Image (cartoon, rainbow, N blue to C red; front, side):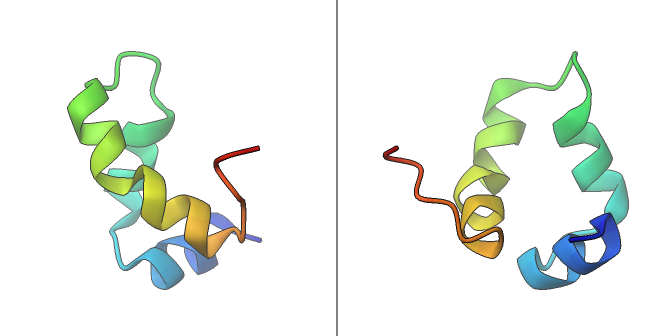
Length: 47
């Protein structure tokens, strides 16, 4: 899946996705999108 398609499925901007990938990302910012990204990728986070 491309980053563009992922942002469309999650409903976020590319700049927000880029921040999630950044090593210095604020953890609370990351967790705002964590479950939505997992759902979009069809990943069970309990694995």
